[in-house]
Image (cartoon, one colour):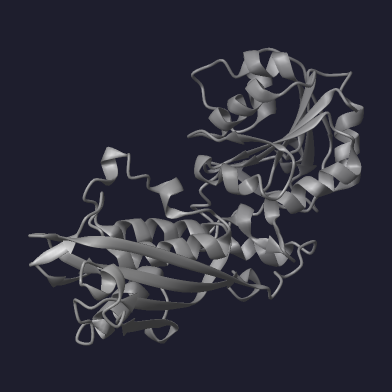
Length: 373
């Protein structure tokens, strides 16, 4: 089957899913859902290549999990598919949605076996309930539900998608372009994961592992006179702040790196480079909120954060509780899961001379347990 490229669509925002984690990043044991689905397909067919379409911000992270071809998604499903087709080398493409995570091998084989008979092949299932269209009853025997995966001739699908019309699947685009579309028996096993309640219908998914992950963060900045001093999102003084591209909140920057390290996502400079003008003087609380959303989105929960501030000045005893609660609120955790400690450098080095501040942080994460949501 080396003439077939598998395209796995996994770039959605999961806006209807109703959980902090994106559905494609739910862990099955210790694998993200998109990888769990891809491996099921690998056991069915020897594909020419596997192309995974993901969120542009997550592509580098996805490459840590498998040696596939990764492509950035677009605004609509159709845009994501076009991006994947541009990278595909097979004569045929089999397009699958990660949301149909319980893959029926026999259904896939039925689709593949019809590839020489039609320009596009899709699995369908019957409608069991009484149905209406608007306010009119319709014959349910005439209704069918179309599933994925769908097989298409690649070049014809590219032509079919060259349209201003938005299509919700490959077969409708091919039909609209006048190409032949064939149908094979689908599978009720391939229930689409759209809302969190659908998880109860999917018996192929194991609960996430109980692994824990630790990351560390370190940041330091020198002082600059006449600038607000921000630590943990709290203004400490207006007499001096930090020399930095952003607002210089060295404490939050350290926490961000700890979170990125624990999740394996990278470091703060990769996401918020100091060469980018849009981050000039930005409030670091916004950066932390973005990172928390990202970390949660790829399937983690924050267990706890531990922060040590090394400084001769400013003194933080009067501000530690406010910093703790501020960080807890941004990270959506209870305040007792955030610890803020402060110490001095005993007059040694640039910190001891009162020229700047050093902050070290540790973050502990675990997989989001979707079975309890």
